[in-house]
Image: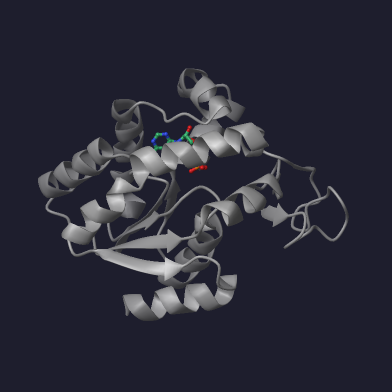
Length: 213
Ligand code: AMP
């Protein structure tokens, strides 16, 4: 299965991805996670992309596409993958399409997780992540058992810099302007599966898995 998870920041793509890859047994490829890991490890790529992430702006298409293909060309992606957070612009979608054609591959489905803007702002501003293992929480919806401590690995749970309110609004605007047009793009390709991202997490995963069968 070669899948894309599309949706605004805060739609719950990462949470759905975690559920889906367990059932589908394919690697989860999140460009945001790749960039954050590189920033944390202070790699050359990390230094190059840090200011974009801090400000909620998109990393340039060419660089992002290169990073994605480096990952997709690895052995574990041969039988499928779940792309989360890529593509985010029409040029990225075109570059993905071209790369897939060159490799004789094609996408199976694009899952569009739909959530209204006011819900997104609330979700993102309350989101917390574990500094160590990346587990995600929400101060109201899914708090840690002990305040500020990860349930999974006991490390500190923090707010991502780009989840601060001003950056959140910027990220949503970037989504509206640059990423939303991909819904029409993939509708025309006959690949879109739109689901309601406000449904309970497990119910929604079940619905997506049923639709993929
Ligand atoms: P995410 O975790 O998917 O919300 O991504 C966090 C940040 O990483 C975004 O706000 C962008 O700065 C950057 N980023 C992630 N994916 C992409 C992409 N496909 N194209 C450009 N920038 C991206």
